Image 1 (cartoon, rainbow, N blue to C red):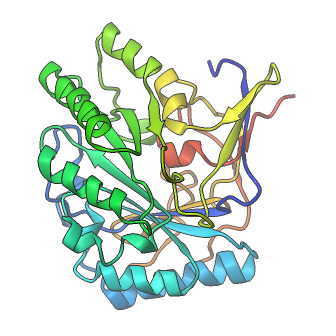
Image 2 (cartoon, rainbow, N blue to C red):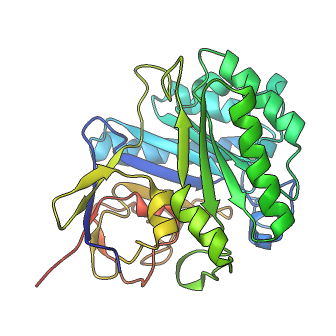
Length: 330
């Protein structure tokens, strides 16, 4: 089912542990393919700036001081992370701890907001949601980011809605990006309604599926690198049984349905960690092995020091797909 894929491996000099933090469940969008736990705002009462700083200190102590990782990145997702009232202060604290920063955002904040913190991020992913995104405002933000030499070039993730009108809106916005930007990175993203075993597939037409397979990732880097020089990246290679290999684009594997890793050895918990909006801690977004503990509660718990054998049929989260893993053969 994986077309001969046998290994995904993190590359030397890349991020060694990627902490995916769903900062909270508040969002200013209500996309039809999203679940309420991503926007309802019912789970976040525990989170204050002081508590968030405690979380960062725990990550630093375990992954950098105990496990000796040199390159650790915290990537914020949500809900919408930038709605957290003291988000800028939190980002500055993480930067001062020598932990790298990434974010997935809907891009609804303007450049006046981003100009104060964009230089702190090593990776920025902006999701284009055709039901809510304001094309002109988002395009202007991307233009301003491109003009800023200290801001990494964002990857724009077009959420390809199967509705023909919304699908067309995504395609048209991709054309606008190419017309108005000198440098751009675009992902045509296949929508998943959920993660792990509860994933509900979105039904696309045959033509839409063919488009997703043939047009997964596009970029044009004319005058600058994809990220500013000397900043760390998340970089993996995919290896196949026939000896071929390529730089991993997780969205490519997702669109080609090469995401079957049951029984594989996976470094979930070592190269990854997922923190949910209620403070619950898991090895990865798939929540393999269940909740390890919770930062939202008082009792102490141990963060992982070894990987797992994958028990799931499919790996639907792009962050989980990128974790180092290898097929085990008898």
